[in-house]
Amino acid sequence: MKKNDMVLIAIILAVTAVCLLGMRIWQKNNTKGNATAVVTIDGNVYGEYPLSEDYEERIELPDGSYNVLIIKDGFAKVSEASCPDQICVHHNHVKYSGESIVCLPNKLVVTVQGGEDNGIDGSTY
Amino acid sequence: MKTKRIAFLGLFVALAFVLSYIEFMLPLNIGIPGAKIGIANLAVMVTLYTVGEKNAIALSIIRVVLVGLTFGNISMMMYSLAGAALSLFAMLLARRIGKLSMTGVSVLGGVFHNVGQIIVAMLVLETKSLLYYLPFLIIVGTITGIVIGIVSSLITARVKKVLSF
Image (cartoon, rainbow over all chains, first blue to last red; front, side, top):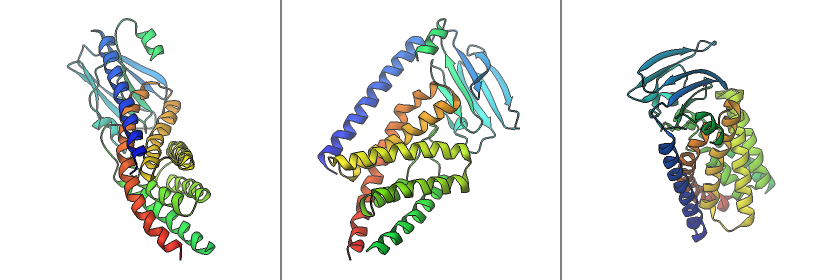
């Protein structure tokens, strides 16, 4: 490893750290009490669920695959899915505005949208 | 000399294929979609530094098509093709500039592989929310890139000895 490699790695890590920090702060400031979990399938909005109420739904897709969405204690998560990789199931639960759970095989995305201005937040993100 | 190179390229294609299969069986399940160890990049890196640029491009394309047809589907092939193309482009450029050793080149390859996949996934799913994963993917790509870079420079030194006969 040369010195240049070290510099490159340091720059990459520093830039990402700054981005992460900025994102966290933005999320904290933009998540209000009435945040919702928006489920989209293949780009189309399937449903919107407030994070303040506990809720559970088995989302069936036309081709027979499914994802189970659970909202509990202000968090949203996917507890079960038919996809082979199970990445969405292992994913941490989401709570802050902008956070999302993605199931690529089923083309399903759960995104948290926070607060009153959520239309504007959605387009600026 | 020429036949030797062709033989090596064939070997590396087979190696890349096997490494992709291993990668497919051992997914990096850390809750980030698209995160990969990228061990197949080992074969690409060694080819790039021993057999040559054009052959490394050929190997990348053959690998993605083979793996896509064998283990995946068309959409998976699209993801990996975008990742492979972007990462190979970054690595070729970095190597041409010549300021970085193999480790740095491999780090760039790892980072851009993940970036390329996220961009395609964002286009396919039509959602910008995937951007949220980008920092994590870049960190994962950097770490795996360092490891792959060190290992491939060790392999390259040995392969060069054989090739120079």
